[in-house]
Length: 182
Image (cartoon, rainbow, N blue to C red; front, top):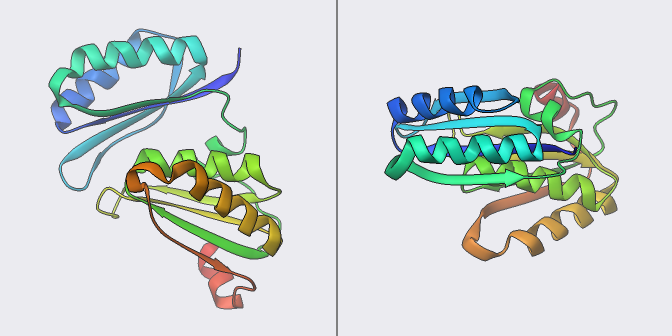
């Protein structure tokens, strides 16, 4: 089976925790993250085989009911996305830097997956919602042409719904920028 990631965002912290508990009990999935977000929301991120993640999300929706804001299943996710979400990805060298800010946490992971599949880039970081008012952002690196291609592809695929709030491309980041990223 393919590796998948499932996201569920709630407008209730108690229901978010209860639903996360049910999601973990109902299938062979791994908890990637579960945490309160700004402002007063809760997000759960699970991973596993596509069928297991899909079943777990359905159980989470059943328990969460009207408190579920958004649910998303990302099947066949690129293997570098999960380590970047957890902050354990490895980057050998920072080249051109692409930064994409998203309207919500879930979109940042989708953007990272699109970027790395679209072009020869590496994911530096995926920051999900904490301290960001519910937003997310993705940092990618590679040759300038690859970074541009990745971001253009992400923009084209995510244009609907205004999920990308802003983006920047830095062709040659200053050494002090490199220090704060590593």
